[in-house]
Structure formats: structure tokens, C-alpha cells
Length: 209
Image (spheres, rainbow, N blue to C red):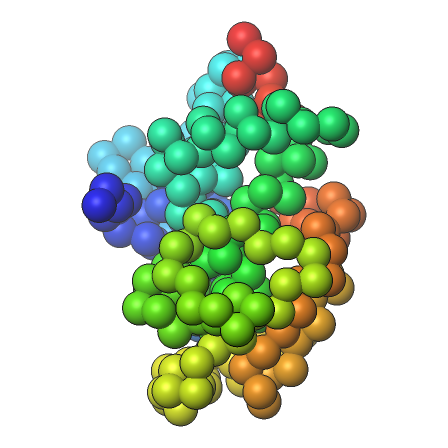
């Protein structure tokens, strides 16, 4: 199975902002962005270079891919699906990414990062409406109940992730019971509920070229 093996902290530095790929480390002063806020590599500290429109569009696409842990081929398929739906393509794209099971598991605190939540899903530790689902790209729909298996709930790493997520608060579109490691996907998130640091319109411009 294809995977992105790039060092996670280098990915954040390349995009110039926190992508929260390393779980709790991203919330401490050990975060690479806090220590070295310039891009990695030999020419990372060069400044004053103006990026073209195409460059900005490409960087935004790469950033969104890295945030959600999506490979290029997967991302193109998701974009095509978003483009075929009614409404704004950019907002549809983000809603499709947010409704992936690995992302929902992360938002509910089943993993400290999306990569960790994806691993929890792949190991068969997540139930959707009482049925075991081990496909990270599975699309969760409004009203679906997502929960951890009894065995997974007892793991210390999972308990720590749930406690940390509960302390920060859960998104409005989820109804989560952290103690029961269970939640309901109430509805697709509104654009206002998603990070303002993402500019999905640049991705739409890129694919519309």
C-alpha cells in the first residue's frame, strides 16, 4: 500500500505552518515550527522570492493533502467527486475529506493524529453503526454512530488521545461521549466551522486550469 514517508515535521516546515501531524507534540514548544519556522533543505532560509499564482495553488493543494494524509491519486478522485456534486466545489471537497472515517476517528479523539487514527481504523478497532469497518476512506454519513471496540478503549494511548481531545473540545458537527469512546456524526460541517487557514478556492483554480 502506498504511503507518504516524508518526515512529518519537515512537511509542516515546508508549508510554513502547523499541520498537526505529530499529535500532542504539535501543542508543545518541541514543535518544529516553533524552533525552525523556515522551509527545510539547503535553500529553506531564502526569503523575498515572490511565488507565482500557480505556485500558490500548488502549495495549497499539497498542504491540504498533507493535513488529511491523502495521496495524489486519492485526492484527484475526491476532487472529481466534489466537482460533480451540487454547491461549491471547494466546500464539497472539504466536507468529503472531513467525512472520511480516519478523519472522523481523529476528530472524535480515537487517535492523537490523523495518522494514528488511521492506524486504529486499519486495525479494526472502529465500529460504524455496530459494524466493524477497517477502511480509512469509508465515508461516514449524517446520523452514523462511530465507536471504538471494547478492547481498543482500554489501551493507554487511546485513553490519552481521548482525554486530550476532550480537553480541547470537539467540533460542533460531532456529538461525542469521550468516556464511552463513542460519537455521532450529526451532519456535514459548515465551511465556517473548518480551519480558516485552508484556502480551498486555490485548489479549485488549480484543477480548473
